[in-house]
Length: 254
Image (cartoon, rainbow, N blue to C red; front, side, top):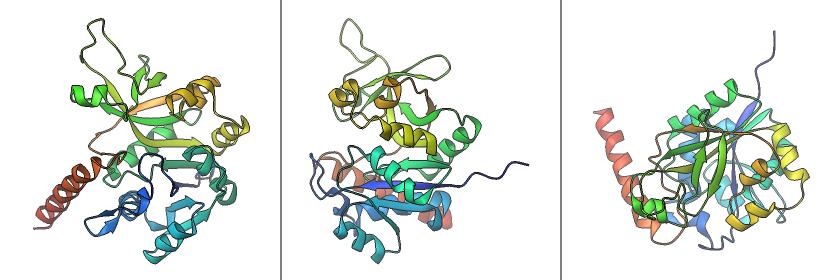
């Protein structure tokens, strides 16, 4: 009888975001962004299975204050996935769910969907996606767009509006949701290349390093009712979503 695989969520966090410095500690209605992201992950798998990977003593101190588990990493990680891989060298988990630290309203059910899919498709990297709802999302440079095969294998991902039409208008599309599942072996191979690949570097989309090195990525559709904080304008939008979530939770308890 095979043993049950050991897994956890690792949230990679750094202080010096290019577009929004100090982003993890931004106050969102009384709690930091990283605390809200951590809480949503804990709702999915429990506190003991959620780790925050960072090089920052400031972030580490803050996380310890609200009860989170810290894994210290170096300040030389090329991407969030490199940071997750480095953290897992200490944790030695069989597989890892990577949730980005700027996802304070991530849906816990979506995390569980990715976990379930990975457990059924252990040979693939697994990544979430959702339908794009309007042209603003489709043409946004901050949202990676996804194209995939009939079997939901990732063909390409871009910040450009794809799939494009000859009229340059929005017809349909899918966006990446930043929940990933990787085996320990996937992560070890990812970091073994030691540098960003050409399309990964150009697009600033780290999942492309797998694709460029012939590692299959399975895309899984999730609810998509999350919103990452990429620029200052996203803060008010996220706070509005937090209020809606809190109101719904209150109604469900009544």
